[in-house]
Image (cartoon, rainbow, N blue to C red):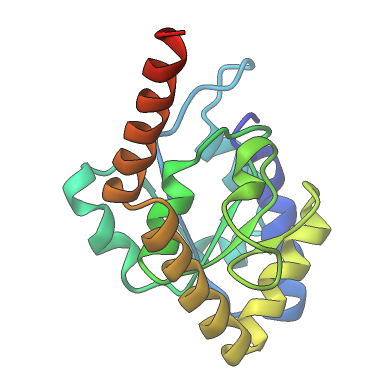
Length: 178
């Protein structure tokens, strides 16, 4: 539930009520719920049988294959309870995917709502509404994807991060000398 898996069946159904042919692909390791079933089992048990073929659950994939799995997609969604600096969201943004972020914490600071990502409250209806908005509006999807990619490249590129860290260390060093 921490990563938002408990919201997925509701998000899927809400999206399918507007766009019944949408396909979802989940990437990430499956875990056991406290009741003994896996999250995969729990999600599929709550999705109508007719729609189950529209869900692909990859599980954990080797890091070097992540880009290959993300490449065919134009939209991503994140609904974790809290993410400080979500690498998965930044990966999707850097690959040119329009992202819906409903996660708490620093994830909401990765971009500007309506500019480089869409922020949504952490509930299934709001998340689904944002997904449908992106899926129905190719120009909005392309603009947010482009701006998200630009933002990640300009703000979170390793060179940018290392330069900022160097400045912080220099400032700390100067302050320590007084």
